[in-house]
Amino acid sequence: MHIEVVSLFPDEVLTVGRFGVVGRAVDGGLVSLGAVNPRDFTEDVHRTVDDRPYGGGPGMVMKFGPLAAAIGAARGRAGGGARVVYLSPQGRRFDQGLAREYATLPGLVLVAGRYEGVDERLIEAGVDEEVSVGDFVLSGGEIAAMAVIDATVRLLPGTLGDAESAAQESFETGLLDCPHYTRPEVVDGRRVPAVLTSGDHRAIARWRLKQSLGRTWARRPDLLRDRQLTDEERELLEEYKAEAENAAAGIR
Image (cartoon, rainbow, N blue to C red):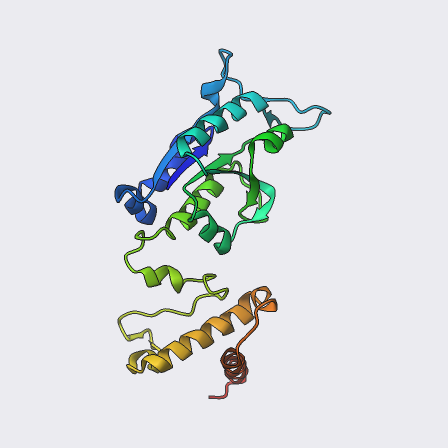
């Protein structure tokens, strides 16, 4: 897979490919990263990429010409079948499902805006879709692009040492992940749940599913609204709720 980022700060955004999981994927040849700077497609001595908005108002808007040329160059590098995505507060929310979708593509072009945004005609003419990483404001799209890259690349076959790692993470099954523990068995008087040291793999799997369901119910109930729970899942969730009520009441 080849990913290109259109950015005024290419050095910033390419750091995502130098460390950790994405860095290993780059070193292993599973993905290649590049960046295109719209300033390289300007024609004035100041390399101007922005201008005042029509109709007045605060801030500046990225100009059509340099950005369109940069996207064209990035699309050419990313190859046929590449999707052009503009990181925008107005876009579709980026989630695990979309990361899985992107991981099946041969190429991806991520457009990181700055200032008040980009000329709307650029979105109409040169962007396949708009994507938002959350309901908050960033100074530019670079951090959002890095998040999309990390979430997507870790799903490429061979990126993670254990294929089960990705399958069991939060949101992969539509639920939050269960709690995890490692040695030592007791820390500050807090003991690892006994089931995890029992060696009973069926009981462990059942406990982990119950914790995932319970955490999702307690922390992200919106994820359960459209989920059709199985009989086992409903039973486990009720167990979790009862245990939580007993714990709050001090009952063991």
